[in-house]
Length: 209
Image (cartoon, rainbow, N blue to C red; front, top):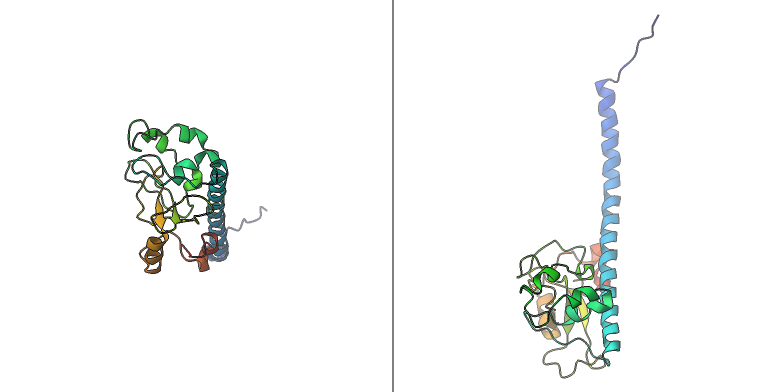
């Protein structure tokens, strides 16, 4: 006599699906936490590399920081730091005498260095179509700056505002007396939550940008 084959009942199937759903719900917070930690690591690493690149620039230029940006031309710290973050080819492909959106620059400008990207920031264009802004800005002493020597100027790299629309080859600098009130009043909005949930505050000067 051939034995009877017993199939899976609907109740058993529902029980199995319920168990799988519970396991997935238990794993999701861990997966999300790992994802945030990974993004935080990338963001922190980029900032450290930019800090190091600025120090190397100063060492190669008699202790001076990069010159102030000249909008709309490739200029300022995001442009000058490129050879020191292994992006010499990109810098050489930009013509300082032509606007970023000009024919001579726009193609190269679309190749934004990964170092200028914060993993928390959504993709967005700048005022030049197809060219992303830098996700970081430089905070400098109140203007006018009498000297851009490293011994005379203290700078910090912080996360850019959500509405920052300058193309990345035109570096953005914010005087401390402008940036501070914007940050304190809540007008300087960035993409990621406060340090309590991401740990980013300690990585950007303690301001929780």
